[in-house]
Amino acid sequence: MQLKPVATFDTIEPEVFKRDFYRPGVPVVIRNLSHNWPALGKWNWDYFKKLVGDKKVPLYNNVKSDAYTPINTADDYKTFGEYIDMIRSGPSAWRIFLFNIFDHAPQLIKDFTWPEQLMKGFIKKYPMLFTGGAGSITHMHYDIDLSHILHTQFGGRKRVLMFPYKEQHKLYRKPFEVLSLADFSYYYEQNGGPDYDKFPALKLAEGFDFILEPGDTLFMPAGYWHHMEYLEPGFAMSLRAMQPSIAGKVKGMWSLLGMRNIDTLMKKTVPVWWYKRKEKKVYRNAAKALAST
Picture 1 (cartoon, rainbow, N blue to C red):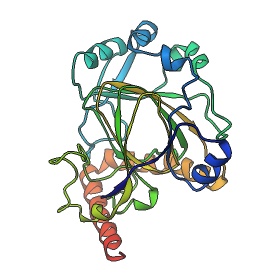
Picture 2 (picture 1 turned 45 degrees about the vertical axis):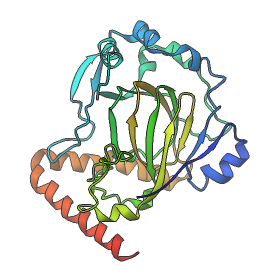
Picture 3 (picture 1 turned 120 degrees about the horizontal axis):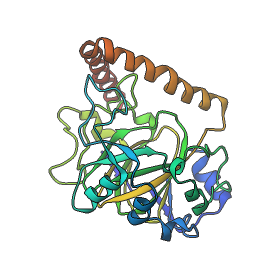
C-alpha cells in the first residue's frame, strides 16, 4: 500500500475547507473544531453509564463477514453499562456502531454544535456514537449512504487507514457490498496487514494512514474507504451530511434501498453461490486494475 499522512490543521477557515477539502472530496483532520464543545470535557464512560447504562445495545466482534452474514448483523447484545464495564477492564475486541444515544438522552444534543459554517445538509436526527474496546476493529468499508461525515474522537486513540472510492478494485471490493474481501487487521504491525500474495493489487492502492487523538475531528468525504483500529478503549461521534448534488443523493438511496436489499436477499436464498460469484468478480476487477497500471 502507498500511504501518507492526512492533512491536519489546528483550525481551518470555512472558505479554505470548502475549496481544498469539501468540494474536491479530500479528507482532513481539524484538531480544534470540537474544543469549544461542552461534550469534550463532559462526556465520559461514567456519565454515559449514568444516562443510558440500562439500554440494550448491539455488539460487534472482529470477525469479518462471510457468505452467510447479512450486513450489520450484531454478534451479541448487552446493556450499555455492562459493555462499558467490559471494555474498561482490559483489551476487549467488541465495538458498537450506529448507536443513537441521543434518542435515549436527548440532553446530549446541547453539548455540541453543528458545524454548518463548514457544510450544509446535516442529518440532524441521526448523530451517531461509535465505541470500541482496545483491540477492536472496524473492517475496511465505505459508508453505504454515501454521506459526508465529520467524525470526532472523544476518548482514546484510534488508528485510521483510508482510501478514496476510486481505489475500490485495488481494495478488492465485494460487488453489491461496501466491504473489502481483504483483511487489513493490524496493517501497521510487522506481522499484520493484508496478504499481498492473495491480494497483489493492494500494493498499488494509494491512501492515508494516521492516528486520531481525543478532540480530533476527521472530515471523511462521501464514499471514502476506511478501516479503524482502537488502540485504547474509546468513543467517537459522527455527524452526517447528505451530498448537495441530486446525483449524490440518488446514489446513496440506491445503495441503501436497492443494492443492500438485493445482497441481503441473495445471502438468504443462495449464500454460497452468491459469495463465490462475487468473489470471482472481485479478482477479475483487481486483475484489470493491475493491468491498467
